[in-house]
Image (tube, rainbow, N blue to C red):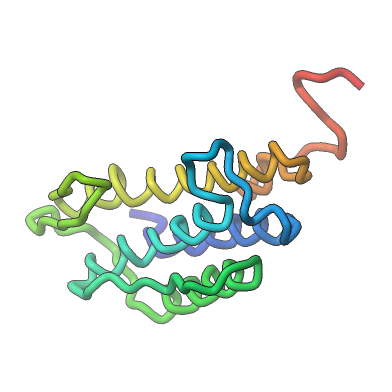
Length: 165
């Protein structure tokens, strides 16, 4: 594997932090609809999925840095602390698919080999929750773009594929 899962997670934690930093504090309690998590909770859950997936690969209990503290500062702190903790953990250069990882996905029990655990469970859940952060921010007028999400795209201010100037 040319890029480690640790590098992938560190890079996308930076993208989550980029999006979160653009969101005004008053929007952290917003959600897309009433029965969904808020922007704040989606950001916390996304950051939490990184260590929830990485630690078990090392044979360690999953660590959660989520706190009951509310607000933008708490979310940013969790992302930064998650990235710092990840930085201090050993690199994982390959998955041992003879090992089964267990977790709870809603009301389901997940039992997957290491590579499936990461690529079919942890990574999609991370991006689902980051996608919710992005969608809530965007739907509330925050100037976020696909480049904030992936760190690659760039567009001129005000550009739209759909709306003509």
